[in-house]
Length: 582
Image (cartoon, rainbow, N blue to C red):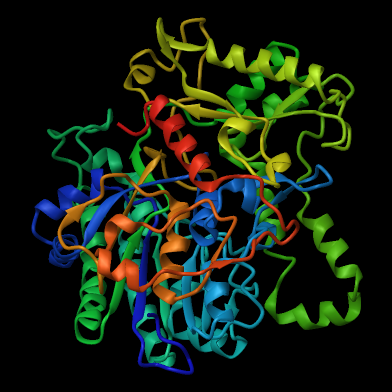
């Protein structure tokens, strides 16, 4: 059982988060023999793909991993999304409707260290150990390190924490080295934290470079990438080995974790939020969706100043980036206490106004029935329904379903070439997610296909519509060449874990919380979607460590009508049908 503050004789759990990692990119490095501790972990433990969320984006995926619930229960679906008033806002941990396993651990006398875990900003006010929030932190000026007394020493000793966007001001010539340095520093931060908090029971460290390297360098090392050219000898060797060098740096830290559990007992878990693969399709997807909606009279704009032109310029400075700039200003650490004193109860209203997304300013809402979510990701589509948005015009009921079904069929009819759909699937919210937060979800989820034929056809569809080819990351000199895939990874080694075997069924991200609760001896909330990854453990260990069943965990409702196992199986069947889990 994981150690308590009151009894440190227990074991420690190391969780190593590999953002965007998947075996299609890890295994070639493994075969090189240069990451012996990864091999040791896999040989002595269990490894498997791990299925991400719909959509496989960072905010919903890490939130599902943390809470054991699908986005329809925890309430986070994208980087930007509407709140109950219909206003679009930047998502952070305040949007999450359920507790993370870290909070459950703290409540059960387990000290935790959480380092750079995405979407843990703002941190819990009073952690038992240490929190340094990761992706989703608005700026280094924000209140992202708790306890406060660790803030200044950590920023001084680990300068990489002072810049929350490691791609800022970088080029393809320099980014790979910066990400390698950040990886080494992240491991050093974990070592330092263990010295400061030697009694911690759980240390959760996330490495971001395993996601960013594939986004910008995969065409240099992935032979399956349409842009890969093995014969181009002008490509620097550092580009070819950019991801391998990052894994080699992580391997050193992984080895130290394995040494500790060999001596003292415990476990090491590897997990990723989603996988990575070549970007073969389009970029600027929200511009394409908005143009299609406008051409078909679902979206009515004010002409050249309307949403379509704004979306087409997303690469030059997206709405999301402009609002993130504002977000960096509303939680500065230095004036936080003064703002609290001066504004009192008005602070929440002011912060809400600053963080509201002023999008689609030139839309004619009296005529618009559907629109694409802002931000440039092109995953979510919303129906302008009465009661859901401030100027909603589509009545609930039959008219809503008629319009949604019409749009769904329209997107499903788009083809790269005859018989090859542009999308793996166009899913309704009821198909993709379930739970009490479903009303905040997009009405349709667009599951884009990554297909080499798009490039071969110059990004022109059968009906003559064109998509924007991959271009530069907004505000940088970096060109996108990689994207996400549904299959991430999971591995575990340690006490009671089976040795050197695979799992017959890939776990979901939602399975992590029940599994961690079992190791901690904490009751599992009765309304989680995940299940203990029983195939990873010896029968005797499972029998001796059965967790109890706790109360429901939603912050706003205390009932769930969902049978978790049935819904989990439903999602797997859906993804298999869409061709993701081959």
